[in-house]
Length: 88
Image (cartoon, rainbow, N blue to C red; front, side):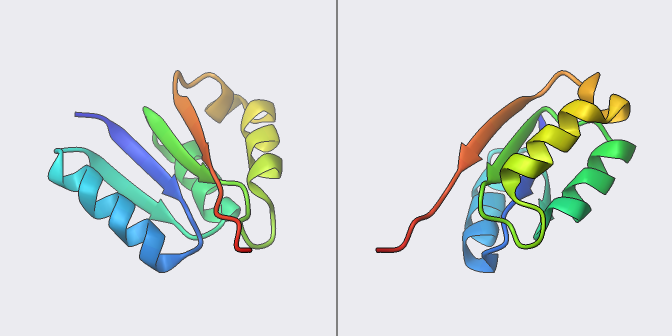
């Protein structure tokens, strides 16, 4: 199965996503912030990123732009799915 990176700062949401994906046989890495996610992707290729737009520090959009500008990440063939949770 695929290698999936979940960039999500809400521990409850991240845990639920990771556990469900693991049940389906995927290798999952959780990252609570953009810096952790970017460092992981510099070392390991991923097939899918579930990217929260509202990450602490560097936003998900900033992270996406840095992914594009970082050769070690940009040359990977991956799918990025953007997630967001807006409270009323």
